[in-house]
Length: 181
Image (cartoon, rainbow, N blue to C red; front, side, top):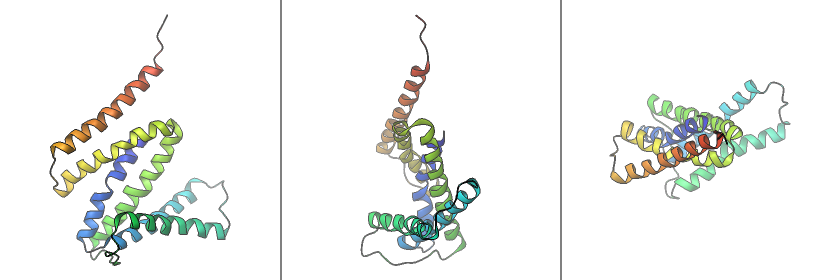
């Protein structure tokens, strides 16, 4: 269940990003705000959840923060943004800021935490299969919240993904069932 929750959260990213863009935010402004907010939230989660573990030394802490906040930001920027669209515009209204905060929490921090927790429970192979549910959640969110059309190609793709997840679940059930001799 944790991996499916992770997939749904990551799958909501395009929807929240579209809402931020509609408020006047650029790709760069949205990504920078998303990853800085997510990094701070992850540090807060770590602080609350691991009281017995010591924190890294200040220099290492700064390096980790910079890697999380800006390293991930730059990698994503290079993946999504064309060189000509590097304006740094932040959301221009409350709805845009709410969208960016949801992007950081619901579509970054929570999915990352549930992904790693679930992976520890079921392993990397099963996690990889279950994580393919992300495009299905993106399709559903696009149809429900952005008014996108549900095309035959999207339906067929979603059926294949759901079929793969169902096949994995069925094989797991069979592997756990003992057959008496």
